Amino acid sequence: MKIKLSNISNNENKFNSIDSSATIDVKNLIGNIHTKILVYRLNERFIARGNIKYSLELTCDVCLEKYNADFDKDFNLVIIPENLFDKNNIINDEFIILKNNSIEIDFNDFIKETIQISIPIKQKCKPDCKGLCPICGKNKNYYECSHKFINIDPRFEKLKEIRKKINEERN
Image (tube, rainbow, N blue to C red; front, side):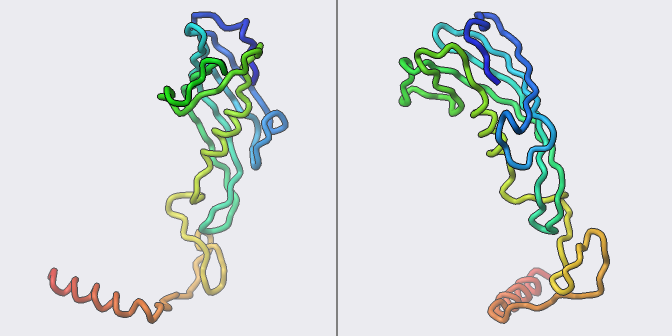
């Protein structure tokens, strides 16, 4: 989303955009990115606040199934002209540096970064995902298998004894 500086006044200006993954190169994007931005001029700076809505196709780390995740992110930005930028005076982490001869603000990189940062490190299709059976490999969310996996690493036997002793002392 690009907004011309001439379209921004001291009052809040509302801009809406629907972008596809072709416009903003994001892996696993499903459908479009819906962006709403309110921008106003504050002296030589610009203040923007808004919302980004999008869906991604992710793979569950527990059961390895693909699932769709919807995201709804609010943001606040300060757009600073390059000649006023002083990294020592930045209070807000989220800012865009505007080239001195720019005639527009380009939000595309910010939107792309916001989407990439929002992808969870541990991806789970649902909070109670049961995962895969370590014996037969079936997805335990859909199939019941009779395998009981109790193979305890012998290095942890001592911890098991300590846990048993603690539980006995509590009772």
